[in-house]
Length: 395
Ligand SMILES: *Cc1c(COP(=O)(O)O)cnc(C)c1O
Image 1 (tube, rainbow, N blue to C red):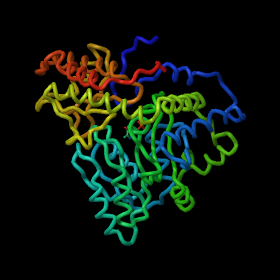
Image 2: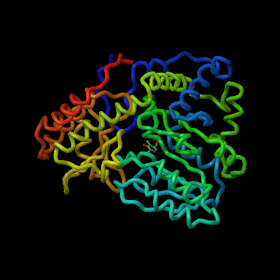
Image 3: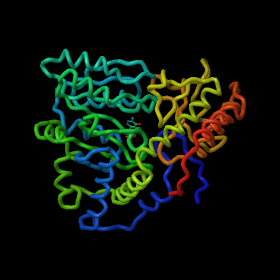
């Protein structure tokens, strides 16, 4: 039994007891067949969570950021052009990484709070008749702004332009919590991390590569050693890694995929949607607004909530931590001090969400904001009562 309050940051997320236990295992020889019994089911589980029949799954001891580097360094060469929109801190950081790797980034500046502009992508790709652009980058869920983007629309933009660029999708804060369709959307590289939807401690970069992306690795010349998928594939063929794998985390990942698939992916997504709708009902009752500009881009994994003009939103996060021992997310980059974030992904129930909403109310009231205690909780309760969660055994 844990007496730690749940966290409401958009990663790392709450770790179910069952996964903590799965990560806590005795040392095994990571070059023995026993390791293969952990590795291969974990990779198969990830492939299912990605909704793919054939993606090559590569898992590195790293984090989501290492997953970005895996995508870039294995598929591209110095001087290549990539297309990316900047609509938040995570898309910004990915662009920065591209530039540091000597890639030329065609940046579509997009107001924070908006989704990826697939129509602009289509115009740019259509105009690129020489196919200078080698990859299109898409952040599925901008964790800084609580904005989801339409990856199917980005695929349609590529197809409408008849453009052969690879499609790289950052799904770090969406995969395993929000619908993600690797095969159907024609994703070439998907990137996730262990500490968000997979409900594990941080420490794994989880990637999926399409056949087309694997083909691109053969001619790409960006330097790579630790993140080389060819070395990794050779290791996997022998139930091993090119170096020491994070065995406990991989065992946890295997278990996490089992939990997600047993709950059913559609049920997992529905649970996140329901929890998020309750949080959004609370935000409305508080008279506050989301950073996300319209319902079609509302994220089901994180809500970035604007506070009144002149109020430093970071104070909410500081006060919640010091007064109540509860963690919310701060605003990042352009929206620092303007929003605070409630993370609602991973291992979470309606009841847990209510405690976060209640805490946020206490904090805002303490800080003198015009919030009536119970107003957001009641709005969320109404929503949860009307949309009751299917009961299931605790994992
Ligand atoms: C958390 C996050 C990252 C960074 O992942 P790390 O595991 O911290 O390296 C990248 N992209 C998105 C969308 C994220 O939410």
